[in-house]
Image (cartoon, one colour):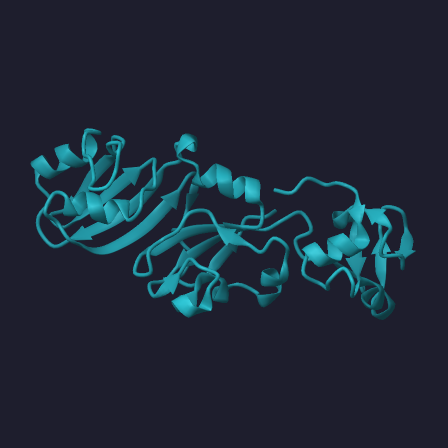
Length: 233
């Protein structure tokens, strides 16, 4: 998450979505901003301070050190900021957060029809770390397919030799645990385009339902679809 550091007051207000930098002088006239560490009332937008020390009209700033959200994504929502693509995962979050600079974004994506855990943050370095193949972050999916999963299929999916069409390198070794004939728990440490669906398709199986249950150390269990858990603190 964002480190605590001295910044101009107008920049803090703009980054947290309260107003633009040019609007900061008027905002300070309308609201009471205090630096609790210094015990002072702030009226100068150029004053340098630390966001976590501030209150607005007696209330702490909204996530002054950054946002990290665990969302249980429902089917039908897209991991995009473009409303032309349909219902957005960000529509499920407070509108105030979308005014932040930078705005919160997802670490990686889930397909429109895929459900489950997605991590959302305004920390660009954290997004890079969580999305980078070099991080070897485990992602666990519950996969439902149209035909029984055979031992031959398990071998192809887990031995690290499967080369998908259009890719230059084979998929890394994966882990698969059978739940029943048509369902399994499938663990990856990479995130190629539509990878789970393409891997099963390469074995002659169609994925009917896909749910990401776990991302790194975070699990979606206990969080209803469309709801989120605030991990920021």
